[in-house]
Length: 238
Image (tube, rainbow, N blue to C red):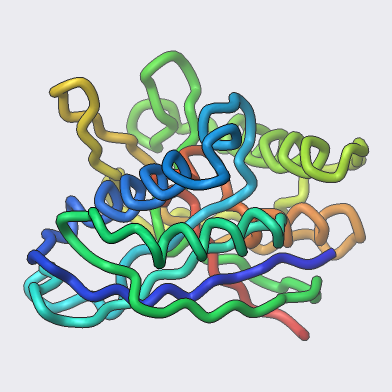
């Protein structure tokens, strides 16, 4: 197994608040897909097998400032998709907020993952328009099951084979936030917030659990990866 990572360097035409930054990146990706060779992928239903992280570095005033350079990271299991998207991002000059001035790709081969950390909120839907939080639900076993099942489905949809793992891939889950985190977007003139959590996860050591942990790194843990949800970092042995 392997995933592909694209580090994107962005020049900001206008200042962007941290709260709006995920929507700004997501819209740039979506518009680039629609105008290029990825329109069919963009419009298709199902898993897109990619995820992105936020702008770095984060300024102390939680603003990304006009005229400065920031980076964000895209990951995908699909190398062709990432190559095509990278080209489209660099040639999208119409974005009012920023331009992609450089991209750098690397390949990450599967390695033993000892810990996973969420850099962006992990979003899990428990009912229609209701997201899992410790305040609204609190059922940790339900949370772990949905995270596991979601990764199995992502794996199956990309590789075309079932895993049928005998146990949940999570050995230990720790919630790192006191209050729910959120990603804010605008849709049809309305403000929509996806509520989620920051986790530290210790995966089990068996082969199937490690495969699922790697998929979490490659295309996000939980839902809303195309809005920046569930972007993970990892510790382990490479």
